[in-house]
Length: 135
Image (tube, rainbow, N blue to C red; front, top):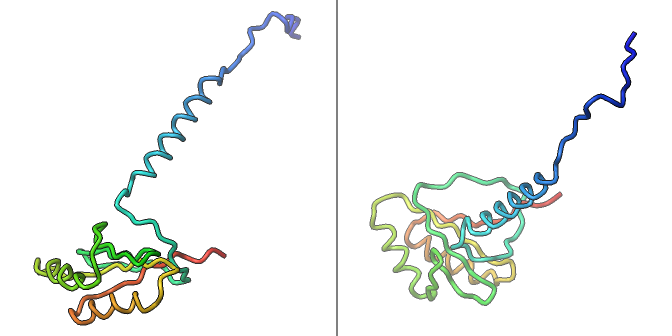
């Protein structure tokens, strides 16, 4: 029989006050790091699609059409008339080129078709970017 008094036993305590600070700083670091992970992306509201992502060629050219109908080629503003020249200069390396077209959901379809026409004339593969549907 154990006749020792329970009040005399040492108590085991875990101090977690410092862990809250560490977790807060880690969360803050990851939030800031994710915000600057891809700073050359133009913010767009993409249309939704139920199809999954597909693989793309080794060399891609990103074309974005914003809501105010500004065309961006790899984060550089380019007029619609100069798109063909930009595409031709990117094709000169000899690698297969794929254009990733990001169009804001408010952009009229004619502006998207005009970029597709330029890509078809040069026989460049074009992929229209969408957001996955949320069920």
